Length: 101
Image (cartoon, rainbow, N blue to C red; front, side, top):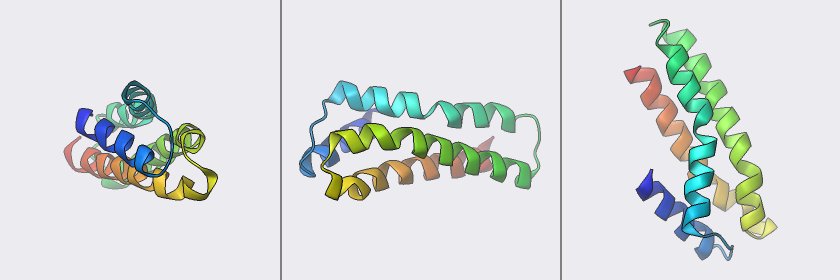
């Protein structure tokens, strides 16, 4: 996730926040845990509905877990602008997990 980490750092800094590269690495790594668990559970079945429900739950969990970290790094008026790209990352990884697991 190195390119995503640089993008997250740049996004937060451009929005007037304060975050360093190592914090961004930690944030993305910690919050990707639910997606990793979902992918392991997806190996049990090839049912698309089952995979979709797991991916939806994992994306929601990962996004919810990243919200406090991102919110603390940017001004309150720009919180949604900072969280949006991170949620898009998790959604894209969830979609990849559904199709590839």
